[in-house]
Figure 1 (spheres, rainbow, N blue to C red):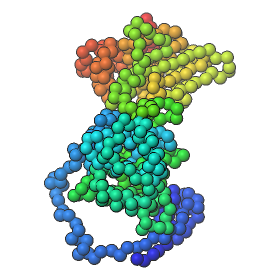
Figure 2: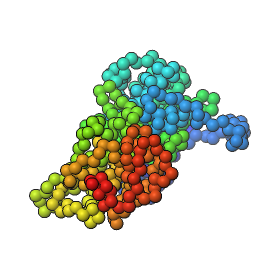
Figure 3: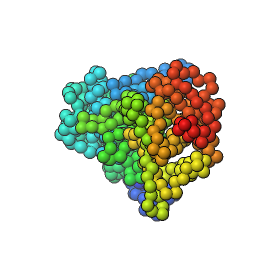
Figure 4: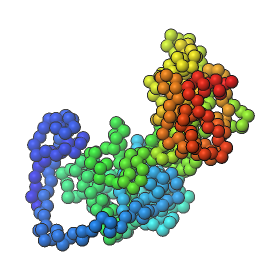
Length: 458
């Protein structure tokens, strides 16, 4: 084999035959590292043609999207688009301690209970560490789960040949190396991409398709470590979000060739592992008696992925004894909260120059869309007036700087969820609820924020 020297950027993977102090691709300084690679002799043209499968018409190709491995973890299935596609490769990333390895061990044992063979390879933890975690979160470990504690991808590939697993879990891809690239360290762009490419060949094998899940380390900028090409290579990218010390975990897909991008699944983490929250609408509301009404609480419906979720918003308004009152929004940006407070002052006729305002949501979910703005405003008004809003009342609308209610997307889907959960009234923008049929829910269309305040606090 012929050897040659190239320079590879550790930040973006840019390759050059010469050295640059600054990477021409991403602009990073001193990130190009010298790498010696071995050029393999190519096969002759006849040999390459013989290895090719026959060319097919697109309409004759059998789609494997329906060939899924379905787990008993409902929120995981949802994010994956209905289960794990048998010839897919997925990457899962999160901050340290978010629950990546915990969730994948649960998935591994769950599929093993269904008769599938699973290979769990770790380049970070010893076999005893993996076993200790499994003993803590799994009641009975299935015999169809094999474990490898080694950072050699060559050894993993040999083990795949021997065990013939249906699912392969690599934790994490940045810790593995191939012997054919001895000059590149683990975690370098070359090793990471070459290891991933070998696993893609395993997953996409026409005669024996397998599912592969890679764990990807996350940088301090909350991005998957390594080159961006790794995210382009895989079929799905999953990210676990959640603050340290809090039990709520959100599983988000930022890319999915077999499902909806942006789909979310919710879990709460315990000593027994990641527990799927199968009915988020109940989790993100406080259970109260019908006659127990709390000032500062309001209800809205947000969309996470393709699913509507009923969400409770809580506000606390208190007197300020400083020249600059506090505006604290745990669930939304401070600039957005300041804008909403200004709308109440100018369009609702309520002064907040001497009031502190604090906003949060039950369960800690973030408010990412404008459909919750009316509910936030009504929560603040309820708190400042010390008058509770009936528990069966919901608000779904954006509010403009003019104080007018604005229509929101997917209103019918949100209203059907409210009707299913047994709510009585929902306030929406004018001409947005027409034609939506409900069993019990009353749809109230009003024009301005002031109209809603008057109607609710008669």
